[in-house]
Length: 118
Image 1 (cartoon, rainbow, N blue to C red):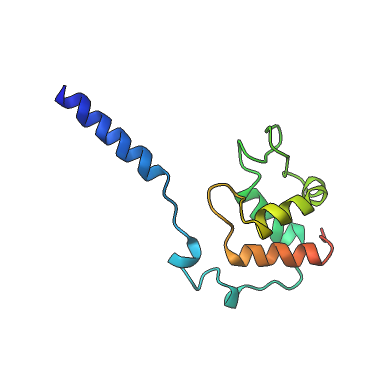
Image 2: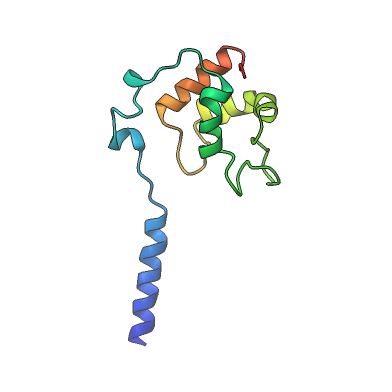
């Protein structure tokens, strides 16, 4: 009985600790902060694709074949740019795990404002 309670307690602690996330900008303010964030000449291939691939088009989220909108190609990202702007930039409700760092939001904003160059 004692071992079952111990296992249950360990499982509960493990589950609760898995819900925690760190804010990159609070931990490393100079690594992605606005002061060091170059938002000039943003293009999909040079800057935005890496953000989308690492934060959005991941397995089970917005990858090809997922039930969510597919963000795995330039064409699909451009087609959904208004939705991306609302969810990731304005509301900051995407990605679901945590909002994007300010620098990535600034890069996305600059890219969209520039007409989404490839």
